[in-house]
Length: 128
Image (cartoon, rainbow, N blue to C red; front, side):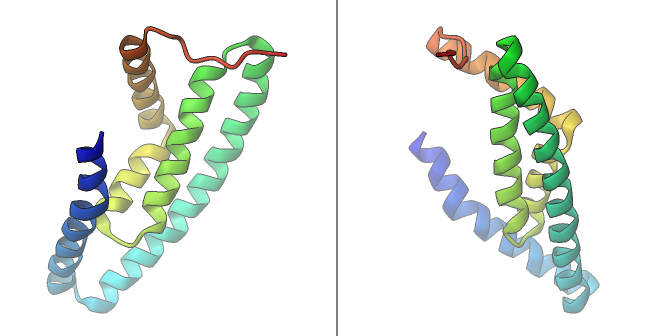
């Protein structure tokens, strides 16, 4: 797990910076800055609407005891939002992958299966 965090916090920003510099050389500095700002605004809008949808699903899932999937998708939206807030093309791409519902749901299903296989415990919240 530590090696993934090192990759995430050290090498991803370096790779993102390299891509930004490359794109700036091709399309120009102003256009690259506008692209980063545009993806940030679009990403924030998508995160807001997706987050509200997940909150509705989570409320419904609590009553039906199907919380696991909604919680995982909510966590993926938060991670996607964090990626979208950091400037860069690679992080924006990762952020969009995590906030678009059709990719997020597939990732959440795989992640849930992987978590269940590794811990042999289903993800659920107990009602008191």
